[in-house]
Image 1: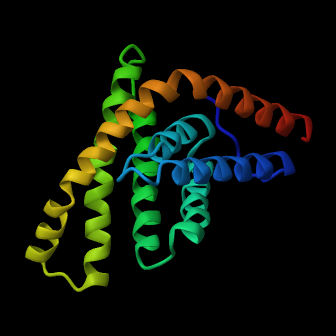
Image 2: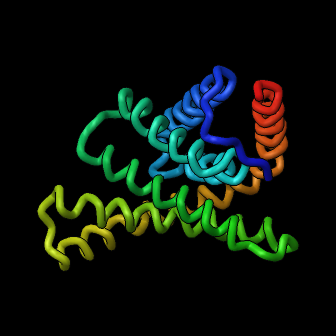
Length: 185
């Protein structure tokens, strides 16, 4: 998949703003379900299509903008940190992937695993803020495993729906970003 450079054209900034708005809206639309929302899967697909920098920008922007509505607090830093790790792991896994024949199955399972990973990362990142000891952290994480399971199952469902429908759109936009970048040079 194509990647954009670090240069920020008006078209690229507009694209990033629209992606943030779309993910923020999807997060709000599904906020009535505990931990079931398409944000994680969309961030994976954005990172695969647009690259690491854009994935990180959209991840942080989505959390900041949606938390203006859902509530801002110390958990905002944990959410940005957790999504940063997921975006970085997506980028690394994509670059380490050799065979493309099992690509869909890999990313499907990866999406599910990130639902569990997100909950673990949130627990680890919030432990110092909450003043939790190691045993307190373990208890806090175990108490949230049901919600992490919902997140994982939701990610698998959203990946099945979004991968074939959204990826072609993201690829077209990414190609347009790359062609406009080449015309400006």
